[in-house]
Image 1: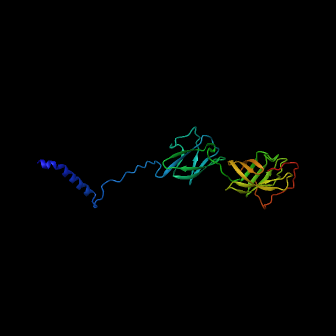
Image 2: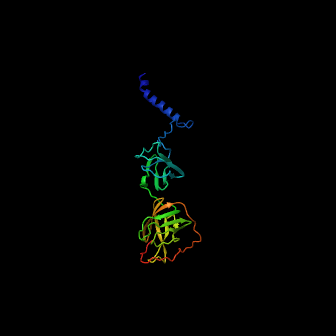
Image 3: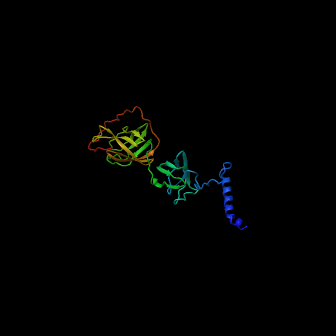
Length: 263
């Protein structure tokens, strides 16, 4: 009897090994359950989230474009909302890099946003903070808001349509007569334009390459060799269409002696 008792542990080890080998037999395969997934991404596998907000009023309906989606934001907040609140405008997107364009009646702002997995990002677009305006079409009527390097030209009005910017009003003493082609060859891709400049006597005009810096849809700076010239858009309506305009600007023959060269 004592011999049997002494051999019980060996017997139990033998039985356990036999059961284990049987469970791994090719007939049934392993009985071990597959590992349980612990992906806790509440936005879905591979996704992240952007939440948009502002703390100042913007004129008109605010349109937010990201990827192929267009969203509308009508709420002005006192402070940043919780990123995952259902009350804020937001979008869940696959992780990656996106361009966001936000527009109001006169507001225009662009952002380059990186969406990261499992992460919610707040985007405060108040005053286009940390964004950039970019370039916008010139169609409409523009008012020059400063003389800058050209005396007496504050108040000049330029109407842009059909690819040309024509002078439709010139203040007394300004060197640019009516029907002057002030702008041409606008390139929205690199935000440049050819801007007309005149010599000391108002004749022999020449076009200069200039960069456009937009501050909003309706506010820009012409930045060229002659200096920086600010304009504000006062109308989107084109009064007339240009016809039969060649490459050479119109020269009315009007001369203004004693004025310095300007634009």
